[in-house]
Amino acid sequence: MIRRSLISAVVANLLLFHSAAWATPADDMRSLLEQNKAQDAYQLGRASPDLLGDPAFDFFYGIAAIDAGHPGEGVLALERYILIFPDNGDARFQLARGYFILGEDQRARDEFETLLPNSTGNQKIAIERYLDAIRARESRYQPTAKAYVEAGLGVDTNINAGLSAGATPQIPGLGTLPAISSNSISAREKDTFVTASAGVQGTYPVSPGIAMYGAGGVDARRHLGSNNNVFDQRSLGATGGVSYLKEKNLYKAGAFLSQSWVDNQSYVLTYGLNGEWNHQLDQFNRLTLGAQLARYNYDNMNIFLTKDKAGGPVLSVLTDRNSDFIGISGAWAHAFAMPYQPVVTVSANYGEERNQRNRADLSRDIYGARASFAMTPAERWGVGAGIGYQENKYRDIFTTGSVNRHDTSWSLDGALSYFYTKQFSIRAEAQIFDQSSNIGLFKYSREVVAVKARYEF
Image (cartoon, rainbow, N blue to C red; front, side, top):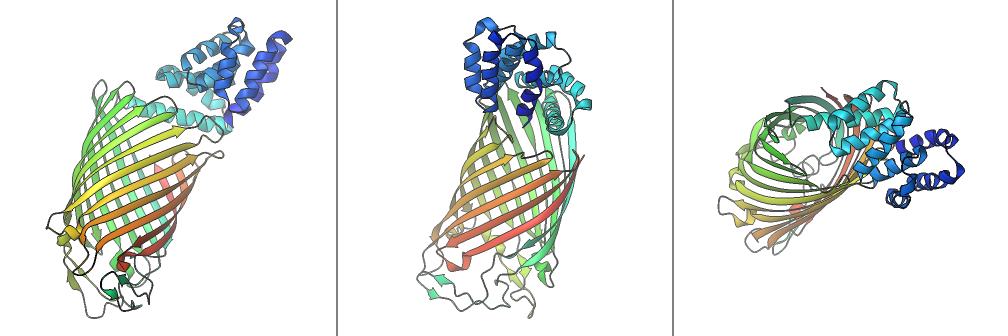
């Protein structure tokens, strides 16, 4: 861990310059910091104000104050230390971190850029991330833009969200349906796929705290199995709006538009409005609230009922699914001041989808929740995982003589990333999805694994 290695590297030199009487509080704070007890170390330092000005004390007190959420005190202590030891790069790193938390981006940038040429390992990676964050914050004052391209290869155990061949779906009120034929388009199909995507995003400040933002992207997925091209997908989307930053609050309002195609046929056009409020409680906690209004316009498609495409295509009347959506969401993210820099995020959402064709059986209430974490276990590596839950309650019976459809689903996902350079990375990802339903036609499971390469510029 960066902090522990930095502390260990300087402690021997520090103790050479200070009396035994003054070494004990500094040693105690160092020990507490190595145990990730920054608040305890800070309180211990606060109890010894007579030692302020002693370099050993100031070094550890400065780190403790920054980590405990008192960056102003920490910066003052570290500045006193650097007056005596101006060439100590470890102390300058901690000081730059304090400047960054205080929002003094230019001073933080100067310190980080001075340290970067001679930095290695975890410290170099940390400096690069701080500089990236500073550039992101500078988007409040000057135009910024970035883009990416990505390609991947994967395996999906159920590309069509189908039922196992031979399954006999249960429909409440109607009994058991005939077994699913292995040749049916509804039978579970496993296949390898390739993906490609690209995107661009940018910001343009128009006045202090106010900026215009925009993003656009395209992605495609192609299945490699024979006859599975009917499940090939591609989409094109764009979003844009205005953001307003005031102290610890960031407000965003915008519009979005996306078009999806399946088997080279128009599938659904989605467009709407969204808003978001982000509140930075402190350096470790952030709250987010969001709202969305959307419309889904489906297109009728020619589809095949069998995998061998015998009998030719038939018209699927998807326009009956046209609907309006309104939703709200909330999230809390917490960053831990401990090894591997873990961040935990918990979110929840609620939405209503209302059918435009007076089909209450296609209208639903949606409830969802998700918990995820991300961390940096080693130099150049990133790890993330999450678990999600969603419940769909439909508002009318599935068909005459049946009941209202009710689905519940769980998902588990994980990703492992390796950054060869700041711009180029490789990511392995996996997802397990399981949906249960009181209408047997919609009960299925799915597993997907993929490896993707990404370049940002």
